[in-house]
Length: 359
Image (cartoon, rainbow, N blue to C red):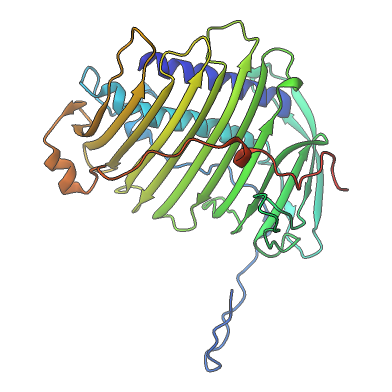
């Protein structure tokens, strides 16, 4: 399990390094009821900076000072495996979104496209210095999911849903739509896809597709589905050459007492692979000391997979306790299914996305 964690951690850091270096309603039908006043529009359209759900409580490797999962217990590593992977994948998405953090796009029915040239400070761990990037965004309606029909977007930034196709230095980078206006406090609802092509990196040949589908419109009922498919070659390290994964996160209740659930599936291949498939389900409450989970994984010949179903453990000791504790708290995971592995066509940038900017 520790080897699996190290593999994904190294793989994700390679992805992150490559990305940072290269990309751096309806009216009431009752006439007696007056129509509701129009919603107040934001001063500017901005991109959300985080579409994940915090899982630090059971991710013991996030920070030693924040580690709440007991060490040396039967479930010390299994409890944290899913949250750790979720945090790594979300970190890549957050760094991509951070590249767009300085954009303040006018909210207007006449804003049908947008262009901005920015100087971005590159973090020291990725070489330091500044990178100049030109961002172009087309807000026209288009077919995002490839079903032959456009998404029904407004075509501008003053009314949702808002479609967008984004070019970074005239290269296709991101496509998606906002069903709500994102704010600093609430990411709202939306979905997007991000693509990185390996032929643009001279150090580690790398192809990466990522997708997020999220609904954070209700702060006490949030869901996020994060997807990734990638390959790494020519690194000179003993890392898996291919990875695919889907992590589904759910939160019910306020942050302090919320019930949270992770369902995930991942698949690795290549010379560094010891656990080709890993499936995880885990559930807990933020104000309680218990976790329920199921793990199913495959191991290469000579290794043993640590699999179990519907276990109940105390987080602070990471040791098994009576299942009744988890049943009483409503966190028992029996009946939940692993997340489906992603399909490459679902993550790829849509066909209705020109190679070059439309303006």
